[in-house]
Length: 407
Ligand SMILES: Cc1ncc(COP(=O)(O)O)c(C=O)c1O
Image 1: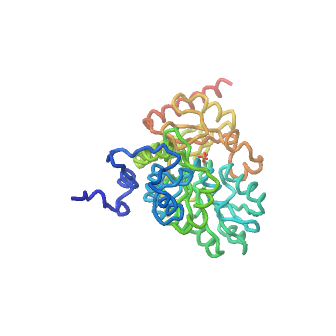
Image 2: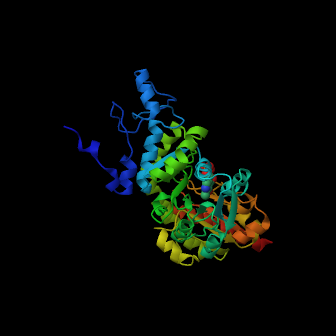
Image 3: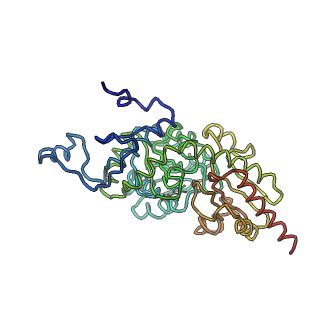
């Protein structure tokens, strides 16, 4: 008798179940935990079999630069979660972003992107693509009329992050998708900040979603990785060959770590999200804080769009400490649980000062336009006890107040 487990269609199941079972391909040993296939290549029984596999006439692995059983399990699990027809894993989030953009364009094409982008994504759009004859326009992502005005007959693709880093601005994904499609272009969404648990850009009209799997997907600070998710046609036309021939592949070891991490993604993100909401409320009520930006709060300026496209506020928040850079530094330096790091989406809570770290490369006027002030800190909320995190922030803010009083 064949076990009903063998033929189960995971597409009809809910995310938590998909993330534990989806995409698994068991070896002849029927292992419970997915196997780690550390191999570069594969053997063929005969030359005829090798020929057929290279021609694509028979399925099977050829070389791990472009397909590996462990990487393939990770890709299938991600595709199930995202509701995408296909996925390709990459060595890092930036490899995913670069392939998603470069795989689509040719010299003479035009790209539109929101101004509020992660620095390396901005580099790809503003500096790398123009070197190959692809022009780009940057717009205020929040302004749909700016998107409309930026479209040209040769616009091939558009790129956004939402919520943005670090000011947690929200872009109307469905609104931008409509404008981009009217112009005959595609929309790529970097969904890192929301994570696949809280926002599904493909359902909102995006053509392609990219992740730094380094963030919530690994979520425990160990491995770098990235994923590109889209329709089968998009992957075949723009991504598959680009990755196969240029080689930014995800290591099977990293894929295995992330495959196991996906099993706990829903519980991790749910807990981090609950904590972030409580911490945002605590900070908003603290006299030492000038402003809190958190997509889950009713005072977020784009609340209506957030309600349409995110299922919750997320694991990241930004806040402005009274007292500018000195105040922000004093608070971050006084923390004893929350670590100082520019990474995010981790089990460990991490804080960074965007002006002097992640966004240091921007000109002061660019930072001002994005609302990144000297007193701003970005907090990625981890899995520690919420009350311990609030106590840690509370004692750091009290230390700042006492320092100010003594001056
Ligand atoms: C929004 C966003 N996109 C892309 C990346 C790049 O990911 P990776 O560091 O995995 O290359 C990062 C973080 O580094 C990010 O925050």
